[in-house]
Image (cartoon, rainbow, N blue to C red; front, side, top):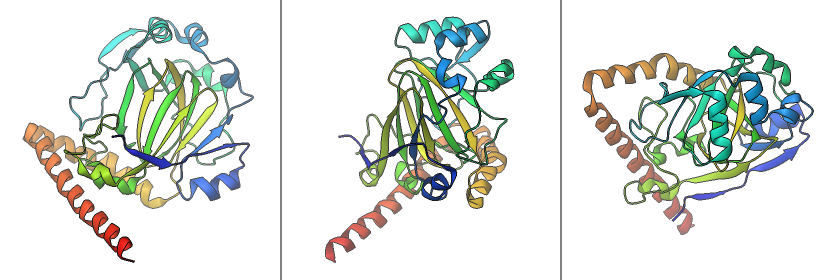
Length: 298
């Protein structure tokens, strides 16, 4: 049985700043902004061959679809290879190899001239644009972004499937304490092990060339490459100060405490976090069951 993705995602073209702020940014609601970067060189010319010409000689780190260390952020690449060879690979055959959070603009600053930050938002973090590349079948497991920033994810080549869950479902998604990960597999949900999944409702969409998915800060997201391709994320400050503070605490305090406990306790710390996540989920299940009963009795 698949998870419940019954929340539709609006698809909009030619949106202005005020409309976006009132209907999506402030309420923190996902939306697909079609053609947001239309008219830029990136929109018209970015493809595999373009990046081979611009950056093909670079050596890059790539990641595989590994499920070990489910509570850790992957920071050390599993392999290194020539970027041109990697692009040829993902353009021609399925592979789980992907590149994530690559600020290619530090290596190739001329690429910054290929686009402009769109006028749909005023708080872009202009020093932190990132590129993401992946082969058909590669995935980014479900997680939250640790800094709680909003993300504008634009697809240029290929197609990607994205699954989103609002942050209020975190206990029912068995979020590990002190970080932004979960052991839940959204493609093969295990309802016996994770009964809280019966109570979550998410969004599902597909993005292709020119589509920009607005992912509000703190939203859970799972990303799968339907075809080999790539995209760019532009990050912006969350309009809600409480979420900015939460992101700061994640980076400066919670992450450090988590690393310290892992170093001190080893595997026992991960087991403890799993137990805490399960207890929190059970509490959330009881609350959700009570609310359902009350609605039925009305």
